[in-house]
Image 1 (cartoon, helix red, strand yellow):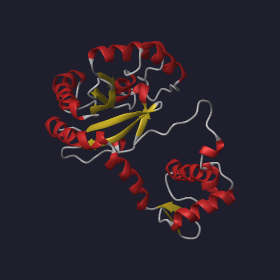
Image 2 (cartoon, helix red, strand yellow):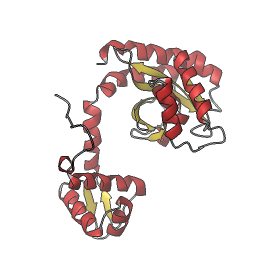
Image 3 (cartoon, helix red, strand yellow):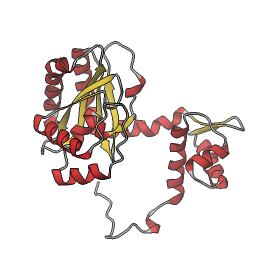
Image 4 (spheres, one colour):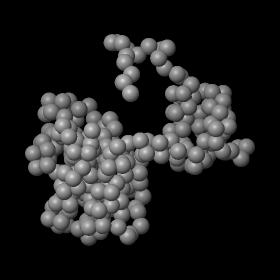
Length: 261
């Protein structure tokens, strides 16, 4: 299917369906709130007029995406069909899920697949051996790219000049005492990771968690995703990550290279 073409310059108002944009923004408001909300709550969080929020909620309710007891509104499982459509249509998930399963079984740790979305990484697939999944790696979970192993691998797709500008404009808040926020240090770390072919981030995104990641390259050497293994610091040392986990990740990423278009 050909890509949509837009004329040079800013987008035209006639190109945008404002009601759809507002409806999507309203759906995202539920994620920000983390539970059922009143009409007033929805309007406030979605930054919409109350009357507009009401019409959108009733439209979503008619489509089965929202339910209400007359006072509180909540999302229904029907919303998951939107995410499922992405997961079913995305080649990365289809190709790499079996690879993640193999890596996780061999490492006896959780393995995940992430892509870059602006200044964040989004986890789009994962695998676990036998232990229960932790909430921190749910599919759809987002983290700042600059302080995560998968993020630094993905940021390595940019040349040094572009990366310097990007880091300078990225919001860099320390999530733990170990988080590196200085743009010069981050630039050096990402360039070094690019040269090594992997990134290892120790307690920068979460205080008791370390992760090692490698880039997933497609046939033309472009970085399209990253796969990682993460573990609690009390169980796995950085040396063990490099010795045990890095070869598994590298082998997995290499095995799918020719399949990714």
